[in-house]
Image 1: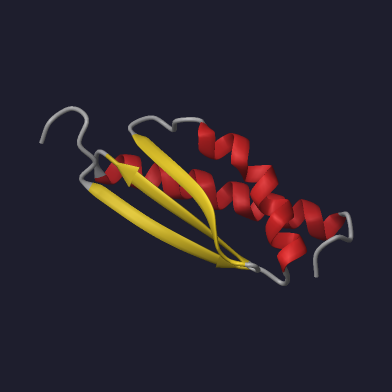
Image 2 (image 1 turned 120 degrees about the vertical axis):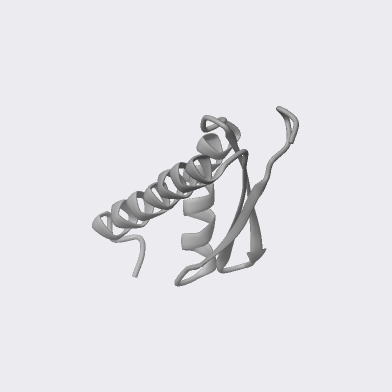
Length: 89
């Protein structure tokens, strides 16, 4: 495997209560998905009006675990914040 190859890939689909919440979480995560987590890359998109799709590529299992924990933590934080603000069900 060369330095630039990504041996590990994962796609996570997060279904949300409605498209407004999905758009809000997408806007919150977009700056983070543009950053590079060490040894991993992420792409954020919408697989449906009410769903986000997060695709992660990583060089090794440790980088994949770290990236998944990081991005899923940000999803959780965004949803918890939206619920506390009364904007998500």
